[in-house]
Length: 159
Image (cartoon, rainbow, N blue to C red):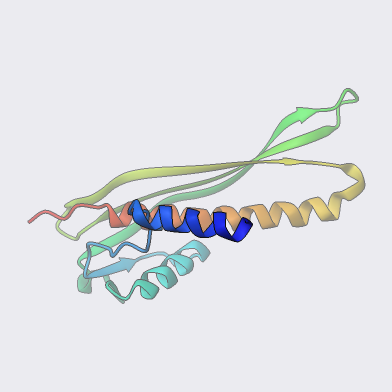
């Protein structure tokens, strides 16, 4: 019975035109990513995987230039216990960037993306919580790259 329901559900989704969102090609033939930073390396890998946009070695070779305005990680106390000990933190990851050409045209105006995650904290499990925090930041980086890729794909090139 379960397999019948699963097959019917799959047929229904296929019949209604449902399709998973695939990778969207970028509107730039070439892109220069100026800074040498961890997220930039992840962004370069994702762009290379698309195959439609070349990563330029210099800004002069590129149709568009990705400029990092700022990147920050923040850790704020979210809640305290009755004894004044930290119970939860809020992790924030901010990225500000813009995409332009050397003639001054803006393809993506200065944009800031902020990702937020909450994490519980326990004095008894400090090492485990540090590892969980590092894992959350890594997950936030992956999410940030995907959001930047979607915004780059939606950029408009005029002229």
